[in-house]
Amino acid sequence: METLPIFLIKILHLLADRYGMSCTLEELTSLLTTVFNAYTPVKDSLSDEKKNQAKVLDTLILLKNEGYIFLNSRSDESTISIKGLILVNNKVICN
Image (cartoon, rainbow, N blue to C red; front, side):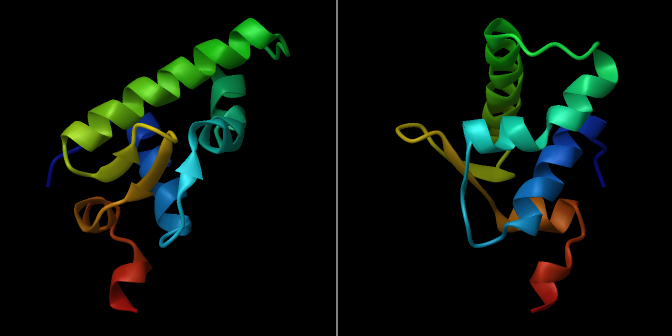
């Protein structure tokens, strides 16, 4: 099995936890706030929020290109694919 960076796996886990629902870019960025705060001092500026959204979007595009998620480019909503669920060994597959 291939290994992905922790940040990519974290996004896949968040999407797997919301299987059957989609998450917008803003929602995912908000859910990943603790991850961003672990790497940078706490700042609450708009530019930091935009930078974080850009990082998440770059990651989502990478995950989409690899087939782990579906990304709606019009609404910036993401859902996990079966390939992504298999990668994170999620319990949803069993249901």
